[in-house]
Image (cartoon, rainbow, N blue to C red):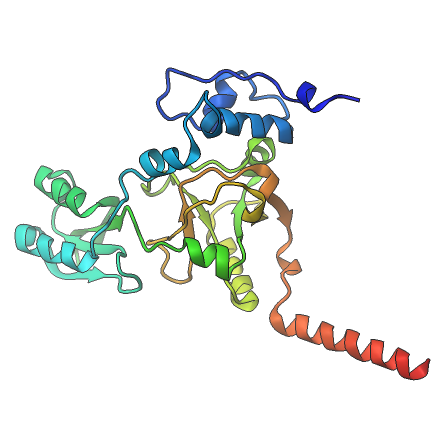
Length: 298
């Protein structure tokens, strides 16, 4: 039988990279086509932020992962400044999503050159926001542009995820995503259709009925086939991740993290396994009456 030391390989740290993630370590050590064991992943995690070969995790979390999201001001304040400085670009309507304190806003402008205006970009940087998407629209034969602006730091929901939702979150992946997950876990990525900082999108809710409804909506919205529902138990990971409200989510509550999630926290499940509260209550009552009846008959 192999000892634990025999399971653990000696991996090299890519000194040419200032902030390597787990995929960088895997690629640097030519491990892309190799099945990684639990011991392999723990050793790579140690290489990244635990032992002397790499920085401590809390340092990475504070100074690298979230270095540019220490604070985002209220979007209403930013919108007032935009109206003051760039009113000549704007149509009459401009929207602020009122769901959270630092949520997204939408601009309706006559010219998309505003996006590349240096003074405009500087203003967004000062308030810690960014343009996630700019799309051409038409109304009554008039062309205009719709600009979506998001905060780098939305409302923090870490305590809600860990305390209220008991550290359990969910997400969908396609076949390729499942292959990557089974190899080394979930790594933050950019959205192909809309710019965001690298992130992992998840769903969580304290109410099982609402959770199931939300997951059904998300499943219908994702434009990919062969989706797999992944249940993520964050309690299995020694590092406490940070979660924020997804500012682009309007029809349901969703959350994002910019941190890696190991594969040993993840398992594939089926949506119909998420029983709602009413079903669980009925099952409990059925079991209770069955047990009580057996006692009476005995």
